[in-house]
Image (tube, helix red, strand yellow):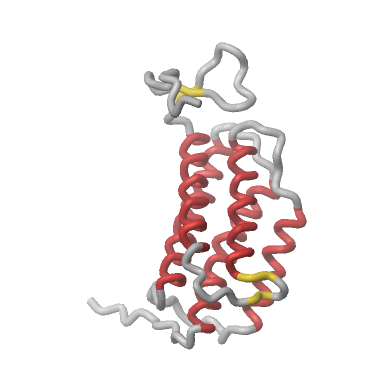
Length: 185
């Protein structure tokens, strides 16, 4: 298999559902969204390999949760590319349940926190911010006409919340205190 075709050298490409002979500019919002979700999937994988200690959340380990997220991100990318793949409502319910279980174990949030703590929580913070950007790019793609299900939009919105919950969970399990900013200036 060749790693390139040369067909996109002039700034156009196509999606699964692009009609024969048609090309789409690579600057279209759908390709920005595809690239951002690809980046997010890579960052989540980078987090997953940092799970030196694999804590249980309900009956899933943190690395299994992250692997599930990666699989869901592939589904979102396929949907963006025009394949007949969709995020089911069950995935949203599962994420909401995980967030609730994690939240029960953590002290109440009263302020923002300085990102970091340890290697894994810092990586999860990066994933959280990329997730928020991916969601914004998804909304822009929808505004430009991408056919994205309501469940996919909801999942994208919940994902950054799950990643934030995991940041706090990891720090809590490692006895790392969340540090509020001092707003020096």
